[in-house]
Image 1 (cartoon, rainbow, N blue to C red):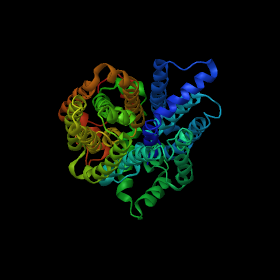
Image 2 (cartoon, rainbow, N blue to C red; image 1 turned 180 degrees about the vertical axis):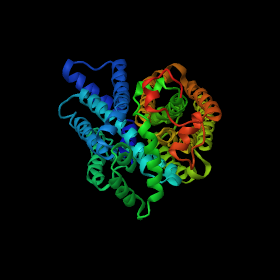
Image 3 (cartoon, rainbow, N blue to C red; image 1 turned 45 degrees about the horizontal axis):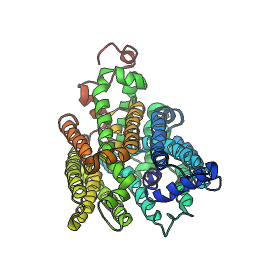
Image 4 (cartoon, rainbow, N blue to C red; image 1 turned 60 degrees about the vertical axis):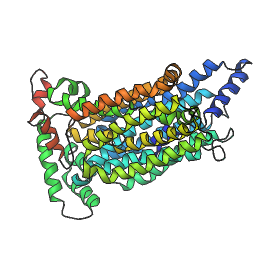
Amino acid sequence: MLPPFGYNTGVINAPEQQLRAFFNATWMERYGEPIKPGVCTIVWSFAVAIFSVGGMMGSFSVGVIANKFGRRKSMFLVNILALIGGGLMGLCTLCSSFEMIIAGRLIIGLFCGLFTGLTPMYVGEVSPTPLRGAFGTLHQLGVVIGILIAQIFGLEYLLGSYKLWPVLLSLTVLPAIVQCILLPFCPESPRYLLINLNEEEQARKALVRLRGYEDVGKDMQDMKEESAKMAMEKKVTIPELFRIAAYRQPLLIAVMLHLSQQLSGINAVFYYSTGIFKSAGVSQPIYATIGAGVVNTVFTVVSLFLVERAGRRTLHLIGLGGMAISALAMTIALLLKDIEAVRYLSIAAVFAFVAMFEMGPGPIPWFIVAELFSQGPRPAAMAVAGCSNWTANFLVGISFPKLEELCGPYVFIIFMIFLIIFFIFTYFKVPETKGRTFDDIARGFSGAPPPTATSVEEPGRSS
């Protein structure tokens, strides 16, 4: 569902040395002297982290675009950004411009920020309630497949060579082209058609296409009941989301779950995994990194089958706890890297870290936000949660090289502490949403329906 997001998360890792060499060659061509190592590291870190800045900007725009153009058309339109960003990165060597890499990564980040909000919103709204969690996990499966493809294509004898790395970076345009071809064959969200546009017949037709049978009366009735409540519930803006008491608890949960995904340290592992394995003394670190990508994909498939059986909350707790233990094991492996047997511990610890991530913190935050809110506040909530995710992603991406330099083998202890905090929060605050309707979940936070249009306009009143 989202290979471009995963691809652009993982693609920057393998060609690091080729990119640094390109930065140096461009600098020499312009200024007649080699780039200073410190400056090169800054440019490299910026090229990695600027992707997340674009993601922040894009995620914050999700609500506006989703409501203005609809879910399907919005996904179609934002693919233009992928074409522009991929083109800039692919042509950077011809123009002798490392700035084009940075600009391309920024635009691709903008694209991914929009898509990581639009896709789970669309999937959540078109999925039948009993399968909503499994379908929501498909979003994460697309992400991890993208990461794995980037890792494989990044091998030096494929596209990770000094001559072909621009092709590696520009391949992100291919999924965008495929999506542009396939999206017109997908129906618009029935919830958007009925609740937002009041087009009952079009909503029924979309449901028939999605379900594969004519008798969609129960689904239509559920949506009509939600629509009737929505008639009293004004569309909620981001400032109103913070002001209205009924939304504060689900918003806090949404933001904390997204922070638990990024502050777990998972992207530090994916951005810099080759370097981590090298530091631990692994002789062929790139293959260990690809192995982590395979584990990533396999355990996403496992979570696909577990999420509707074990539930969201349980899997998230298992994932956080397992990652905390794995982070401790990684620290031990880095401390004792001179002992040959311990080198295998570093590989096992990273594999376990990735596996536990895909049990809960990987897939669950993206789709549970859509479950925590009714139709009115959902786009604004997706925007806030997505922005918090991308902000944390940026902070980890830009700070991890320096943290690794300062803390040495103890760097993953920082992430372990965060994981323990998020485990405690999830245990006490996060409700189970498995098998519950959107309206039932929204009522569960306050014991009452969402605020009416009157209470939205008068934020001083409690709902």
